[in-house]
Image (cartoon, rainbow, N blue to C red; front, side, top):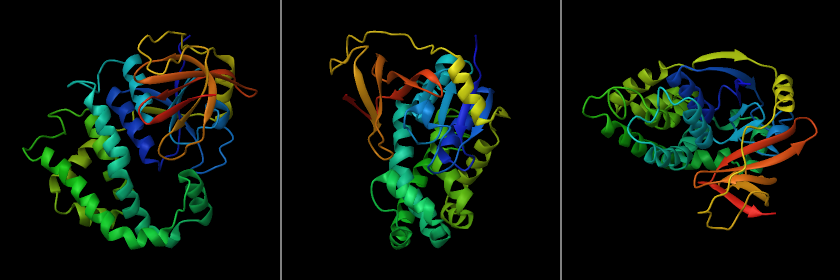
Length: 307
């Protein structure tokens, strides 16, 4: 039985916007389950086993955490049209630049400007998620430096577009545009006046961002969270047990492990290995609300520990 694509997300999430654009590039139909932008997330954690970051993709009883593995799985299941027409490897490293190195100053630009309008419960949630303080006062102080960095990273995109091309890799949009667009979308969505002032130097970036926005999000139909939980419970995971003879840690199917992000939102998710490879680890777990599921994570950017 073919299961629908279900995206657990919220509309103001910049990382979710990446996946929504991939749906647009591939012209996919998908179901939208809106989740809170902070804890608690009672209809998400039964699926993920504790992973709280956004977005999460569900296909039946297979749960995909982090945009890196979601994009990889969408390309595997729906190879045409490919979002990797110029090679599949290095665009993943471009994602790490966008998601981490460029993202942090963009956070400073956004929250340094929004400051005291941020609800206290959101600040507490993000402090718990990061394992430290979430101080908008500190972000206000650092905002000039964040703007310096935002400008520098935006300039990389401008240089790539300097020959007049429509998109980052040429005449047609690819996954590279999705990664580069993340922080431009984030800043323009939340602090448009500040973002537009910072991008005034780079009119080709502004014009390119408008073209990326026109890609759209594919065909979306809302779904209630409880329906998604029910689908997982009725389905069987598609992931199959497989050995990995190149596994450097000696991990094997059946081993009990925990998996956690290595940057923030480091909540460990426990389960039994189904398979590992250079790109992915899939672990089997059970929950009273959803039964048996397999949760998939990237290897890059995640820490695997024996339980």
